[in-house]
Length: 333
Ligand SMILES: NC(=O)c1ccc[n+]([C@@H]2O[C@H](COP(=O)([O-])OP(=O)(O)OC[C@H]3O[C@@H](n4cnc5c(N)ncnc54)[C@H](OP(=O)(O)O)[C@@H]3O)[C@@H](O)[C@H]2O)c1
Image (cartoon, rainbow, N blue to C red; front, side, top):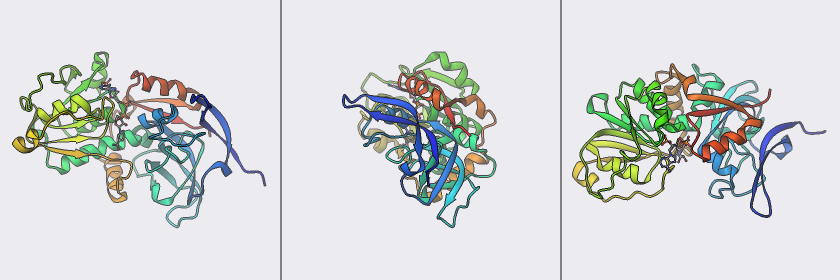
């Protein structure tokens, strides 16, 4: 019997190592074996997807490939007792969209252990406005709070604030009552950042120390860093005694140019954030917060929507740092 076909964005590697992006027809038999077949309603664009689309072998080893580390949709077939046809589910991270065909296709087939039931209080579309970036932001805030950071201790710095992780972190922290200082290299986004809850915006230059001093004036009770490099190093050197910094990204650099003094003289804590293999118990807890008390009243302000045909342009904007907030991808019905 002929297999059902569906549409997907496919990245193909040419012999010259160029990476072509085309919307193509695929068959269900192209998908790997797995417990749960999901018809994807929405996906979202993350930085990793942009890297996959340009042939970054640290993300995707084999092409042709369909990126999309996020997917939200409806279970169509399930070999797992945990899920049944008709269930609305979210799949983010693990290997989805990296070396497993991802959410930029109308169907995914994945292990049951990657699947989370859509939490009450979030639609499938809303879950993708958060997506991996929003989940990572929420996980960062979850860990800051868990480490004892409270709103009365002082300001919280968020770097890469116009990006997906940064925007959601600014908004959740503001909802929790924190005074958020947003760092952005794009001053034209000041109104956007104040509109989603930042109290002030500083430039990347202001957030980057060039003196080379091992410790700087204490400014921050905590921070959600998404960029790494000199901004993260400056933040750690400027964190108050006992303050906490989370680190999830390397949009600027994977380097961390500093010495141990902030840790041994100010007791600063640096927490690494990994959403990809975040244990299921914590993953469920964080989604529960996202759908509950951290659900953002102005979620749509963070979002723009595209479809498979418009995705390539959005990938280019993200790579050129001209993208803002979260881009969700609507798959055809
Ligand atoms: N650890 C995890 O589990 C996890 C999960 C998701 C994402 N990440 C990582 O987190 C980072 C942010 O992801 P995202 O989805 O928010 O990406 P994004 O939407 O592309 O946002 C990144 C932001 O970083 C800033 N930026 C970009 N290039 C920079 C540079 N050279 N110097 C300083 N700032 C720069 C830009 O903000 P401004 O223009 O406002 O400065 C940009 O909007 C990425 O490195 C991503 O790989 C990690």
